[in-house]
Length: 341
Image (cartoon, rainbow, N blue to C red):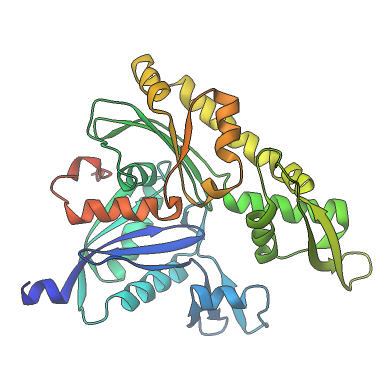
């Protein structure tokens, strides 16, 4: 390993709405933190990010703002996103001066303007060369699918901001469906449900915890009840209520129906030869949303296709982007081409 290899590292970033994961060439995944930033409202100086900022979420005072610079899989607040990327890269780059090449995974439905924002942020954070890869493509590579083969593979990547559905063959995406219904929308649906049916206000963190603990897409063998603390909308005082997994499933149903509909639409647009491959090989579920209880079963029931949840679905995208950065020449075909105007 030469001096240059030591001072400059190639890295892959899964810049997710909910979590940011970073893979350093030769080292593997070195960072997995929430995409949350706490900053001083007056100076815009970042106070905390990742797990530390998440602990502050919903508990901050008027001088501090806790925000998520990524919305629906893309940059919503350019300045804060750039600060976050820079700080995360700095954290993983101890002993290294700069990042030579950076690969960033983005939603497949991303616009040219959104691509430019991601590229600029990575360049401002010190990258010499920035490549973009579509999230479903990265997820497919991450879970060990041979994307170069003349065989159809279907990936459903349910993230925080977007659900990406793609049919992949011959190093390219044959058709894609990117909808902005995913983990965040489910959290929101739970918050609205409590407001409407229980007259209780709950925060984002609480709703996320409820979804992880009792959320499901199909009836459970044993339904569960949990205690939920929030603020009573009528009296304005803290209150505890009991809810069952049946109610939470009802709250999540609309989001799940939209994801299933998008899967159906994608299947309708798939060429017959590739449809036959998907029937043989099944559908792969990746992303944090793949961990929702019974989501695989629900898609299986609605489409009559075999559905498999990938191993460690949360890191599939960054592992794939990492494989690409480890062997960039081999995987150059899978990267998103630069549009030259």
